[in-house]
Amino acid sequence: MGKIKRSQKFALVMSSLCLLTGIVGVSEANAATPEEFNRKMSLGVNLGNCLEAPNEGEWGLKIEPEYMKLIAAAGFKHVRIPIRWSSHAMKDAPYTVEPKFFARVDEVLKEALENKLLVVLNMHHYEEFEAAPDAHQARFKAIWHQIAEHYSKVSDDVAFEIYNEPCKQISDEGWNKLYPEVLQDIRRTNANRQVIVGPVNWNNLHKLESLRLPDNDRHIIVTVHYYEPFKFTHQGAEWIGAESTKWLGNTWKGADAEKANVDADFDIASAWGRAHNRPIYVGEFGAYSKADMDSRSRWTHYVRDAALKRGFSAAYWEFGSGFGVYDPQAKTWRAPLLNALTGR
Ligand code: BGC
Image 1 (cartoon, helix red, strand yellow):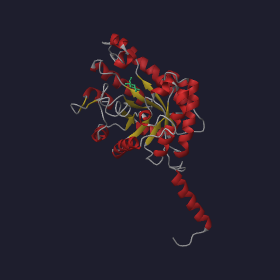
Image 2 (cartoon, helix red, strand yellow):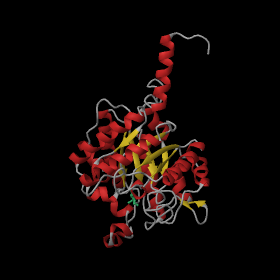
Image 3 (cartoon, helix red, strand yellow):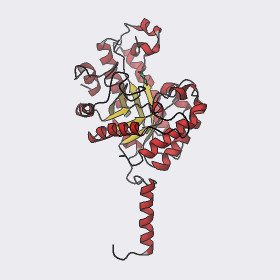
Image 4 (spheres, rainbow, N blue to C red):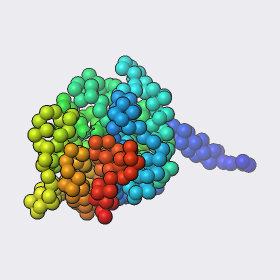
């Protein structure tokens, strides 16, 4: 290396130290703004019912390598990957995540990134936490600490989403206190990674007003989920209970009044985003397969357009199960849904 001055040597040692400890990551100058990232995310699809099942495959679907190729070739720009970390971590301190499970998630991320898809990696269905947030706080934080450390060097094309649909016993105050603590810990190893966070009540856009955001953190994208009218999108949905069978036969015709409802809702999210200077991600929207296909495709097309024209990114719920835009048995896309999503 020849002769180098002491000051240079010091700088060199410091920078390799920082790289090793992951303090630096991407320099602030090179990091995408959350607005740029959100524009790149554009439209995506949720790989639902796979890694957020208690064990992958138990809900009838596994993420196959060809799925990422298909998704990218169809024109989607990102995948959201719901993950039930809580089934794969020790129940007691130090709450270690199974290395085998990390290896599986690594594999899925690699497949997505190789296909130039951006990735939203979340935490999903930690049901014990939803039922008793205080009792599970330490475990929630410890699992995130491990995820953040494990993925501190992964491509910037991966965003972290702290929790899918905070609900049940997770209150406004509880969530506004807990998630910033998790975020602060994530920042120790992922200074400029895009982090996604949404309001309580299942990421309901009417709850945006109660979401508090740290002023000093710019790499945040705010998420909401959209399933309105619920009695249309969730007709016959078994997990909602017997009541949902009464909604069978509800249609969505695309009448002016129906469209106006979607617009009014999205205008609320848009106004909130502008007022708080944060990009918006509709991380889930979709209509269950018990609704008629014409209504589903009309609704999907309209909601997709309504999101994109306001500058939101959005992800269809979901790829290959009950809402599936893809039929994994027949190995074909469901054309009316795919066309609706790709704007054809
Ligand atoms: C839940 C899924 C459910 C979907 C639509 C998701 O956030 O995780 O279990 O199918 O919303 O209700």
